[in-house]
Structures are given as C-alpha cells and as structure tokens.
Length: 290
Image 1 (cartoon, rainbow, N blue to C red):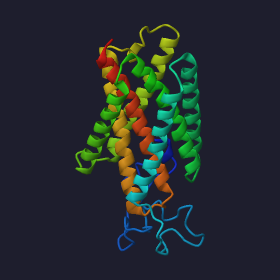
Image 2 (image 1 turned 180 degrees about the vertical axis):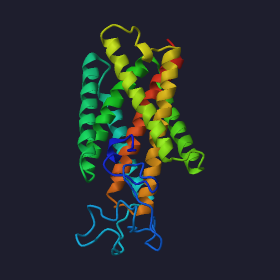
Image 3 (image 1 turned 90 degrees about the horizontal axis):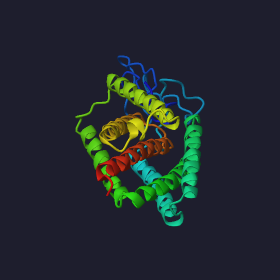
Image 4 (image 1 turned 45 degrees about the vertical axis):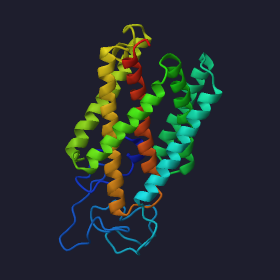
C-alpha cells in the first residue's frame, strides 16, 4: 500500500510488510541487521540500493559509513522552511489581494499551479527543493485568499482554524508517539480505502452541485451534514499524518539520504494544508451566520 501523499508514492520507508510501496523482505538469519544507521544494509532496506549510493555498492553488500543520512533535525528544518513559505505566501496574499472575484480567480490559479508542482515532484525519482518550495509558495497564496474570504464573513475563523489544526496535529503526533496509533499494513489499507472513497464521493458531489442536481452544496453544505463530512475529512487528514510520521520514522531508521527530508517536509505540509482547509470550513459551519 502506498502513502496518501504523492511524494511518498514512488519510494517508501516501511520496515514491515512493505505497505509503503516496497515489497520488503524480512532479514535473513545471520544477515546484516536492518534498521541500523547510517545507511543500514541488508534485506528489506529500500536504501540498500538507492540513487545516491556509489555505483559499486551491491544489494546487501557492506557500504561505507556516511554522514549524510536523514535525521529528525533535517526533517524539522525542512518542514519549517516549507511551512514558513506557506505562511509568508498566505500573509502576503491576505495583505495585498482584496476580497473580490479577481482575487478568487487568482486563488484558483495558484491552487492549480501548486497541484501541478506537486504532481511533477511525485514523478521525480529525487526530491527537488525548488519544486517543493514553489508548491509551498503557491499553496500559501491560495490559503491566504481563501482565509481572507472566510474571515470577511466569519470574523476570526482563520485564527481558530490555525489553532484547531495545531491542536489536532499535535494530538495525532502524541497518540502516534505513545503508540496508541499503530501504523500497520491493515491500518494503511483500511485508511486508504476510506480516503479514496471519500475523495470519489466528494468529486461526485461537486459535479452534482455544478449541474444543479444537489442544492446548497450537497454533502458540503454549511449545515449538520456538512459538519459531519468535515469531521470525517479532518480524521482522514490525521490518518495522512500518521502515514507521514511512520515513513519518516522508518526513513531515519533505514538511514535514508538527507535529501529525503525534503519529501518528508512536503508530505507533512500537504497533510496540514488538508486539515487546515477542513478545519476552516468546520469553524465556519459552527459559527453559523454570525
């Protein structure tokens, strides 16, 4: 099973069952230990033969000790850069672009550019910081315009959504670290099935709304049904985060190349953007017409 995030869809960090996209084998008795860093070698390690390794390194063969393996500090710093770029883009868009049909069109355009950059990065074999930061910048513009529009109707909604996103993501990380949430192959399969079904249903709902079949937004209305759908969407976003946490944890244990920390930051950013947008909508629903 591959990750929900496209940045993890072409490589995986999973040590068990190969759920993240690798058909990892279990270590053979007497063979090299899996999960030792830097650059752990042996059966089951997707980085035993990685694009950064020297040409003469064979699968399962000893490799020279390297100092450029991914660490948690790398992930944190790259995530801070990526999220910082999103924040700066959002603040500038909020400050410069007034609420209007023109700015709404610019927001849609920025979202499309961000989507294209994300897709391009997902098909690259190696991470591109320029693509990732570009994605973050355009995503920030989109979020800034959308947040300002929500704020013009529901004053303070973006601030509450930010606090809600921080609380939900923090709680998800706590439950993951406490092992209350265990990311297994079965967990990933069930979660991805629900997530894919949700996206398909939302796409159908959008078409029905556009063609006038479903009024008031259909399942995405600003009523009780919309609130239930919004809560489900936030839970799916939290599921995405747990996959990100698992893959980062396994990447560090495997001694993944430091460049992979950009992909980790990319995945976390996309998950947080998902949660923020759903949280923004949920805050607006509970705020009513005030």
